[in-house]
Image 1: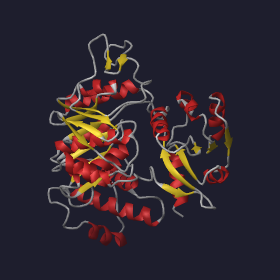
Image 2 (image 1 turned 90 degrees about the vertical axis):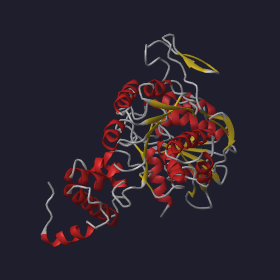
Image 3 (image 1 turned 45 degrees about the vertical axis):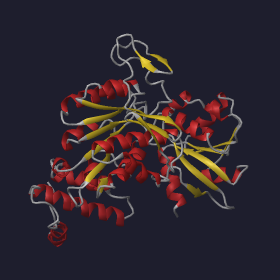
Image 4 (image 1 turned 135 degrees about the vertical axis):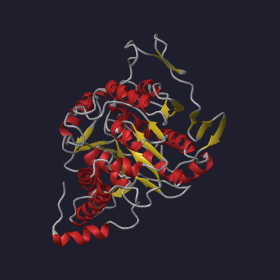
Length: 431
């Protein structure tokens, strides 16, 4: 229960405007007012965007608020270990061709963040929502999305999301319960394909999967999976579904029996795969593929990803890349291989948001960095230095990313950072 002192009551009442639909209960109307005030206070105090604190307080006031604000909308939820934020932003662009869109593509992807994204008018706007893979069942049961996108499943934070088959089972059970929801699923990930097989309607997309070490065993029979250029299969009969949408080239997509051109400002084949998933979901919500891809084309960075920022003095600059687990690192290796061979700065932390256990770095094929100048920094730079030494990759260790950039042989470097290191770099570069 939330109590409001007398001198604040007028402020709360003024926040409860007539733009809030009358179908909302009084508790939810009060919850939305509290959410707005808490978010505003957080921003004024410099504590962040306020999405999480505002959403948390709103759910305390009205536990049913998420279900109420999520109704009467065309909604899509995007989930997976990697690519959620980018795919959500691409999908929001596509849906924006039809009208207003609500989205939490800033990364607040648990129930409070989803509520915050939906807590402003218009309350009938379409929604493209990034949802944490563990929180997906909770959020989807509340808002009953028309479409759910399942991108991939791999180990992420080892102290939180290390059991990939558990996540696949949760998703499969969810699909059996959401009878009116279509799943857009990546056929190249066996865990995703098996999970999506339990849903009532599937749209199969080949978005690619460079990292296969977390899907070596069949999720259905626990035997080793077989793989070749045509796909994957198991002795029990589980096999890669035939996709209706597929990335077939660097700028080419197979789309319901025809080949279409797709040009993005975001780099790499991985982002074309994200765009194919987003376009397939947008189609289910009424957006033609040509309009969807045209809307996506002008997006050049996502929450700082792929953005070039100043690093210290003397004109040093860095292109920011995010890699927070082995699967993400393998994708970044491919992207680095397609770009000019710049020096690479690795900024590596293991704070709570990253996962405290950094042992996953031993699964990353850092040997692929051989021949580049590699510079290491971050809170766990010593761990990364040891890993690179075993990979026989010459490197140097530095106090900060800015110091590393000053020591680089070129004025522009690629900076590969995990979550908190990436966040801190963005903050420092914006000052």
